[in-house]
Length: 367
Ligand SMILES: CC(=O)N[C@H]1[C@@H](OP(=O)(O)OP(=O)(O)OC[C@H]2O[C@@H](n3ccc(=O)[nH]c3=O)[C@H](O)[C@@H]2O)O[C@H](CO)[C@@H](O)[C@@H]1O
Image (cartoon, rainbow, N blue to C red; front, side, top):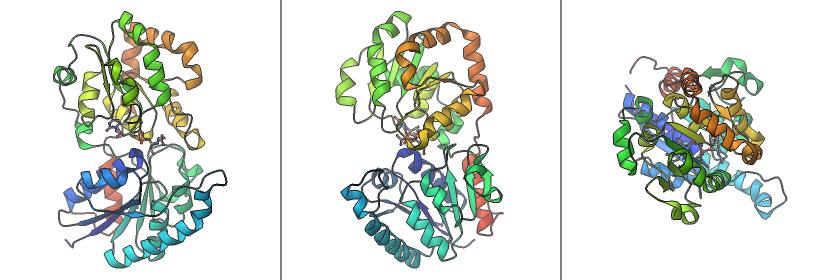
């Protein structure tokens, strides 16, 4: 088969970057000779995480539009023009066979230019509420791979394919052994273990909640793996002990999931997709600070199926201890939450997305 060339564009947070990396890895597995170029935003997390994953990346001078009048906003039109011009140069030079956008503002100019030049484009929308960049691109692209039902509220129905969100291979297979995982974190076997996840950046309110409840967890007999985020590690590292393991960011999420019996998590789309595959009882505390409150919508989609518990930040003070104790004491509830969340897993997402890309470039056969 020919030497395909793919551009992957998206970023800003882990939630847009990891799906792009998972798609690139699967394309590479099927087409070892293919060439890849990532296009992100100049000063964001992708400029570090993409090279770590072994891919080349170019940064555009672009950022989101803010609601207030700021210097950043006044610069916005210039950033858009500069990014469109740079994207044009990249497309002319690299000549991609397909461009894949995974959300975040950097993918806006890139996919707009590529689609205008007739390059087949695919979008991947992780959330149950579509992001602004993807909404702006919906008429320009050929296919839109989504993870939730009823996305025809945002996108043309005939372009939508429900694939789910790409999840890293080691998490899909989940071969990690529980005792080995507990040992990895320096925790005891046979003790109920709670995993606390704040999303790729960490969550201030969840960190406060855990710090306030450390005595409660000790009395309940629970040990903790607590991912507090890079921004908060200096504040919370002091709580490290035999039964509480505080970490900024974990590279071995497979161990974190394997070690835990119960999970408290933000409801970023990637976290939600992984937790469906993991199949354990989860209490979601969605971030109220994201566009259109989409994390609450992500979590509600699961809570409506009795597949997880949803606790809003505003309810934590009044309800957390009771909700946690009820779950902790009720083995039946734990079992049914675990079974129900697993039913919502879409473990073939990455493969299905790559199938769609291959169909577009007229090569559905070589796997
Ligand atoms: C604050 C914010 O803007 N959050 C958004 C961001 O979430 P965020 O960047 O937190 O992304 P997700 O929840 O989608 O995914 C987090 C990813 O980070 C990984 N991970 C996390 C912690 C850790 O220690 N190690 C690790 O590897 C997880 O395994 C997962 O793969 O993008 C998501 C997808 O568009 C959105 O739904 C979220 O609303």
